[in-house]
Length: 398
Image (cartoon, rainbow, N blue to C red):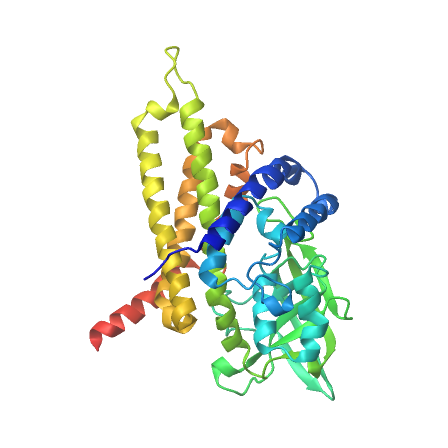
């Protein structure tokens, strides 16, 4: 295992850390109280600065206008960007666009790349990914009720999706739908690109998450497809290969998530330590940091963060070296290890801040509200643990 980081990547990460600290973190007080759409003009200015620094779209292919970083390299970048909720959006490597770029680049036709991929990488448009359904378990992507039925040269899509992140303001959706119901289970679904202006594509609402519905990129949409008709040429990849492509997308995507979560861990840890040193709790001048309980939290958090980071970097290294399928055990591990580490560190940091931690005067309450879902999306923790344990036990039976 070689996690050696080149001088180039170290320089890039250093530049990003400085940019996040100076340009993005100061925007967070406005971000937490304003509609996201109000901030877009200012964020576009920050994105123009990123382009001038030649740090735009770090994980996207060079031929499309990105930096073409490897998964391990982008993991380090993602960690730096994760310190602020605005980081990935401003540097244009945010989910779900990042995953959509990957599968479009791997499976799209030239016409599809010209229409959807190239403007997406440039930042001219956004996209969303419609897979999760209201009445189906999101942890099992082969269980879908949404259908896409051939009618002449078109597909006619009917179904009900939700938690379609960033659907509000997206130019198109990649929709998982059943096209081959008689095929074997894992060959029934396909991915189809649907422009959001298509008749029958109905964004019903932005779902309130712990009281916050959000808008534009920072939202999760509920969508009803009612006889939504798109050309069959909008099929992405081969018919019936939706599940296979989804797995290709989700493996690297979990590295992106986990490294972003590690950035959140580091930000929360920094805030916790600063608060422990500065918060005076007695007339004699003693601070929270003199209390053994707080010291234990800091020590445990430091160790957990270091372990989670090494596990994630190892997973990224394995994927770069051998592909996602060969790294599936490690990918399962990081999903639940890093998600839980993040939630624990954010909770401890909030506790150390006391009443201040419950307010939006720090970023901690925002992290607490919006990152709890990390243990649910991309497969609930329990699903990853079960599948990992089954694979481990199988090796012992052999």
